[in-house]
Image 1 (cartoon, helix red, strand yellow):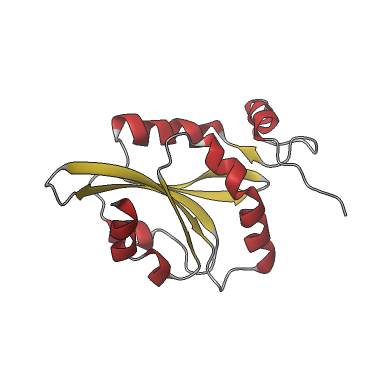
Image 2 (cartoon, rainbow, N blue to C red; image 1 turned 60 degrees about the horizontal axis):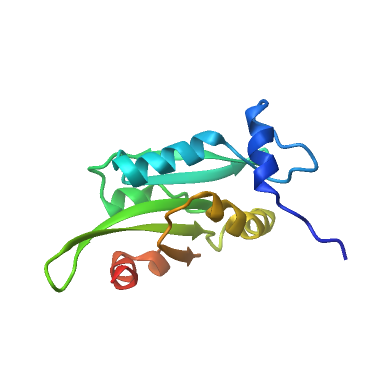
Length: 156
C-alpha cells in the first residue's frame, strides 16, 4: 500500500510560484492563510477565519470581524461541506480574569461528500502545524459537537 506524503514546506514554496502545488509537494497552503492567522493571533484583526480546500490548495473562505459573535462564526460554516476554521474565543475565568484561546476546528458534517471528508482528514494535521499558536482543537460533524458550551468547557 502506498503512503501519501503531505509536504507543506515544499507546498508553500510552490504556492509562491503561482499558487499551485506540484505533484511532489502535496497540498498547497496559500500564504494568505498564514498571514491572516498571524493577524488574528497578534493584532486581533479577526474573530475567526474559515479555510477551504480548493484545487488542492488551502485558501481563505471567510474572515470574521472582531465584533462578530460565535453564532456568526457557526453560521459561516456550510451545512454540507467540510472546512477548517480558527476562532479567537474570549472568556472570563472563575477568578474574574479576561483570557483568550485560539481554537482550531475541523468541520466535517455528516452530509458532506466522502471524498471531501477524506481529503480534509488527511490534510488536517499538516495544515494545523502551519498555524503556530493553536491552543485547543475541536472536531465536529454536527453543530452540537461545537456548541458554545463545549467551547467554554474546553477553554478553561
